Image 1: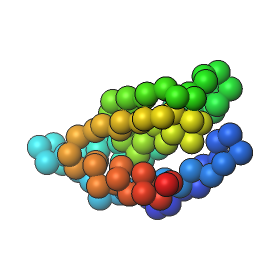
Image 2 (image 1 turned 135 degrees about the vertical axis):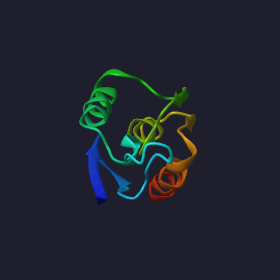
Image 3 (image 1 turned 30 degrees about the vertical axis):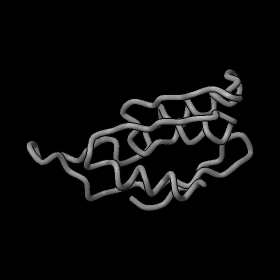
Length: 99
């Protein structure tokens, strides 16, 4: 995978996509390791349709965290991103990359 720079609302969001995170039971890649097309569509929709100023946002099953990071960039006062434990290091890396 690698690093993606995604432009939303005239600003760049840096996302580190992972290719080495697997479910310990099934051995399958965890789908939260990369940005889904639906996250791209949602993030662009959020820019045009939602006023996040002063709002709190909870993203459950955040994966790479793009929508939550966009909400923060659009003025949310508090954003909480959650996912399963193996995805948290990548999610944290994305938060740090976009501070």
